[in-house]
Length: 319
Image (cartoon, rainbow, N blue to C red):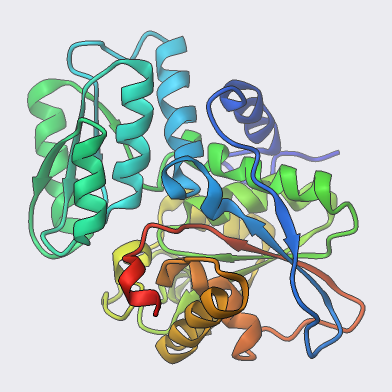
């Protein structure tokens, strides 16, 4: 069995993350969706029920726990994260559980619901700029000044490996799964999933908003490139370029890359609430939008798992 699907993360790394984080994260359920017009068997991986309401909690714990194992997590300086919101939430929560301080840099445009929750977890929140890239630059200056452990929003092997445990759970719960559909921002979740399921013969469909095509453009160009960031899902899928981890795993696993419109994302988010009472973020609705909008059309005999990866949204916008 060849588990070395990429140069930076392997299926063995994902299995190690599963053992390391098992006592700290929830094993989220997988739910069969209503009948799909294609005749395919569709499942929702309910990762929006994860601690902090987002998949990123898995990577945050894996990063911090592994650093602690290696003597790299200092109780005084703690951790630093840069995030549009969700990665900051996950890292602040993990730090609070592990008893270390957290400083989180977010754009000034980060949703109030996420900023308020960051502060509730005890994080020192610094709002800088209007995009993730500006918050990231500020975080790196802070790391240089303090020596705190940096926990990337998506582009570290430990972060991706933690997220990849979702793929192992899907294969356990739906052994005949053919395809996993996942939204892509910076590529950490995609990388972990692809590394986890590659040796199971499961294809991965990587879904991005048309307005933030980081992986799609990188695959076309043969290397990561900067893209403009805009649209309804920018707060959670708004990386300016695909991470090196995500790109290297994509080169090794050859995912199906598709783009979805903002209109399809908005319609899908509304449908998730109206039909299932799932309070998905726009970014979390992107994966299912690929099926609903026709960007990915499964075969009649296909078994498809769609990751609904986050629920940190303003409930008033769901009505």
